[in-house]
Structure formats: C-alpha cells, structure tokens
Image (spheres, helix red, strand yellow):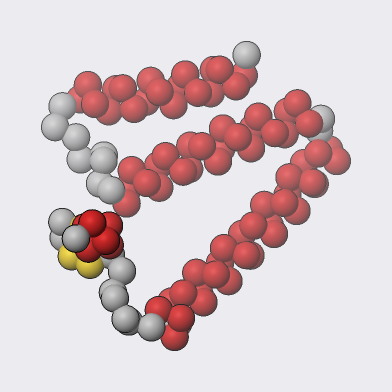
Length: 104
C-alpha cells in the first residue's frame, strides 16, 4: 500500500494512524514556538532594515537561515557521522560557496 509507505519509515512510524494528533500537547508547543520565532524573525529583520540597507540585511538573513537549516537537518538526520573526510569537505565547500555567492 503506497499510503503505508508514505507514513512509515525504516525505523518505525512517522505518523501514528488514528492517534488523535490534535489532542497531543507537543503539537501545540511546536506551534507556539513556530509562531514566536516567526514573529521575532520579522521583528529583527525590520529592526535590521532600519539600521542598514536592504542589500545588507536580506543576504545576511538568507545566508544565516540557510546555514542553520542545513546544520539542523544534518544533525537530525545524522549526516555529520561521515565515513570519509571528503564528505565533510564537500559540505563545508558548499556552505562557503553559498556565502561567497551571496556576498558577490
């Protein structure tokens, strides 16, 4: 069944069928954190644009957001446990190329 494959991973259930997810407290904690960080992000972007130009704030925000997104997913999916140093080298090169590309 393709739907079973979509909701189950190799190490267990991703979504518990019929588990009444809307009654779980963790969902609401995550929503509060998501909304709070979203509002804070917009607040600080606006504060940064008051002090600096858009051409400085937006690329800095882009690079920072991209870096933390990559690092967070790499930690979550355990991608830093590499078999060879070349894999880590490629990761760091990709980050540097992103930063240089935005800088130029």
